[in-house]
Image 1 (spheres, helix red, strand yellow):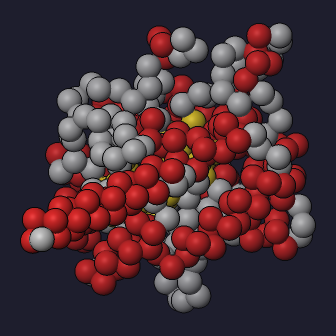
Image 2: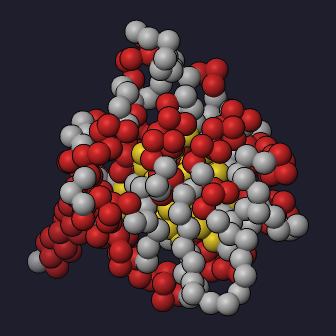
Length: 322
């Protein structure tokens, strides 16, 4: 009788594990390509609870003050946390910080608040370094927030127009470049930069979806992201073999863990309003970022150990379109 009970318990446990595994594999993979690190263990626990519930991972943008917290979180919960560093391009320590993030296994770098335009030669050393180390480069583009105070600031959205990323993509053709916020309000500029750069992507975080839902203009993106992959075969005015326009868009939140459900809902409305095909939706939700970062969608694990060997480029133009 005891043996029978043990076998029954073992069978029940196996069935439970199989049910959980099947449910997770059937659930859509979400990769939040643009999130920010909190500053304490409570934030870590909230992230784990919320993101696991949605089969989601997060690219967590981390300032050096929160380095140890996120490094440990990525070690303890690798199915949730994808560690990115965050540096100020004009900081004289920027190169050393990028190197430290890279050595710790961080996989991307976020740039914000330049004193010169994003494509200024002053920053080219940083970009080429990220390309060589195999780090995704994420740039703030468009309008930037500010607080009301009496402290002068040199920050302005005019330094961070999305069109400046065009030169960076050409300067670093073996890098993956992502623009935040789809360049709000310069959406057309962001889209046209994508059309000729297969290594350029944008998230639509921030106020854009709030704004267009309020104005009932979500379908506006169908006129901005207008080209399809096959058009390059028929005309010299679209990149031959290039991805579909909507394939350049990746999901992101730019919010606290509690903001994930609301962002999922708004992104779904955006996809529906623009009648995005199902085959592209799965890429936009997470499969594109999984491919870029080398993550197995089923296990949430990196396919190659981090840090990558120097010179392990994320994008190979020689294999493009093959």
